[in-house]
Image (cartoon, rainbow, N blue to C red; front, side):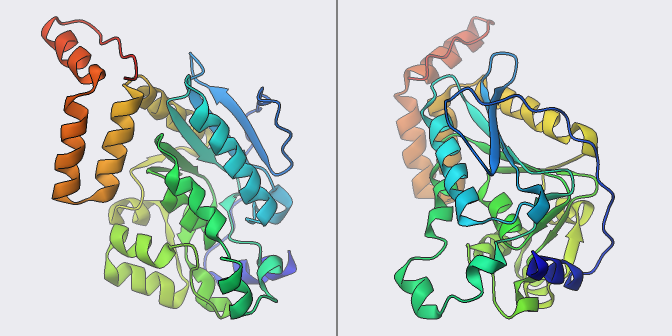
Length: 283
C-alpha cells in the first residue's frame, strides 16, 4: 500500500473527496467473493454488475481480485438471462493500478515463465458486451482494465493515466497497444513517457471515453446502456462486438455473412416491416 501511495503522489493532480456510493445487493450465484461485489441489475435482471471492492488499496489489482473478476465474468457469460455486463469500482478509484507488492520482486524470468498477467486477458475473451463505469482513478492496470472493456463511461472527476514509467517499468497488460489504437500515437506516447494523467473531459475528446456522467449517476447510466444492449439479440450483439474488434473488412464481411443466417436477423427485419417490437430468441 505504501508503494501504491508513492505512485499516486508521482502522478500530478489533486485528489478528490469521497462520494457516497449507492447500496449494493448481494449476488445470488452462490459465489463467495472477497475482493468484488457482483449482482444482476436492470428491470428484468439482464445486466451483470461487477464492482471492484478493495477500497483500502484503492482497488489495486491483486491476483485474488483478478481471479474473482474472472469467476464473475464466467458466471455472467454463461447466464442466458444476462445480455451485457457493467464493470465499476469505488467512488475514489476504479482501480489505481496493479498490486505493486506482488510485482516488485519478480524477475524477467519469473514473469516470462509464469506468463505473468496472462489471466488478465479473460476479460477480452468475453463475448457479451462489457461497459466500464469509471469514477476516480483509472491508473496503470486500472486504465488497461477499462480499455479491455467495449465501452467506457466516466464520472465527471475520473482520471486516466499510465504512470508505470515513474516506477521504472512500462504498461504490461496491453496498455501501450490499446491506448495507441484508441487515442493515437502522440497522446499515447505523452501519457506513457511522462506518466501524466488526463481528465475525463480530455479522455472523451481523445476518444477513450464515450460519455461523461455525474459521479452520482454514472453506474445507473451505464446500467441503462447495458439494458438497451441486452434488449437486442445476444448472438447478433456478440457478432457485432467481434466485428468491431476485428476492424478489418474481410472479417466484417465474414461476420455479416454469419449474421445473415441467424434467425434473429430474420425476426428483426420482419418486425421492422410489420412495425412491431422484435421478439429475439438469441438464435
